[in-house]
Image (cartoon, rainbow, N blue to C red; front, side):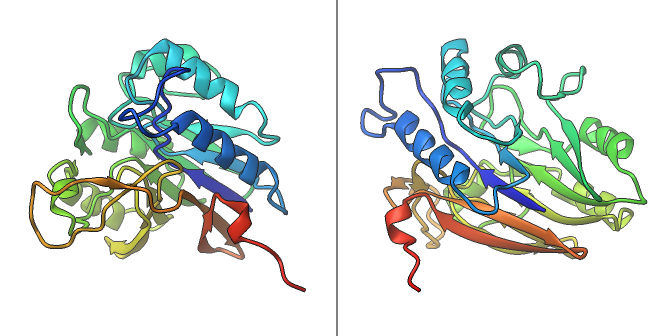
Length: 260
């Protein structure tokens, strides 16, 4: 099974640019085209939060238009730039829970995909609180392997500006995971960089952005969070024989020529 994970497109309204410089709509369209041309075609495409930049109905309508060429199902997630009500209204087919969270669950063959909403309305950081853990308890099946997707990574990245808007409640999530061996790995967004770590004994990966990246500043300076034009990319997860392998693919196909 193949799962393409696109993240943090920050789509803005038609005719506008993010930061007056970045055409996020065009970049997201390019990522969708790249995924649609993959072979084998992924079984599902996950967009792991910050679908839009301002949380408006107009932006979400554009996201739906940009996703339309995909020949496979997609699953959307909420990020700190998203608006839960607008997201639900624009995508009533996404299977979001009816409570305050935009969580969802999908069965993919022998695998369960869990999509946990870690957002805090009005804040850039996230949280795993009792409400999230209660949903996980309801959604998990101890007899099925699970992959857990969440927007905010539960570990420190070392980029101080990102770690100030991180995920609270990480210890709470770690304790929960220690009781749930069926959760085999975690995949996140939010940080606009591919980072590979271990959390509660599980592999944990963050996705690059399909738009702009965050500068990898490991100096510890808290006020140096900045974006850069490192190449847009996405993750391709391969689940086979009970094992997960993750690839990082560039959106730009010109860098991915095949030589026979």
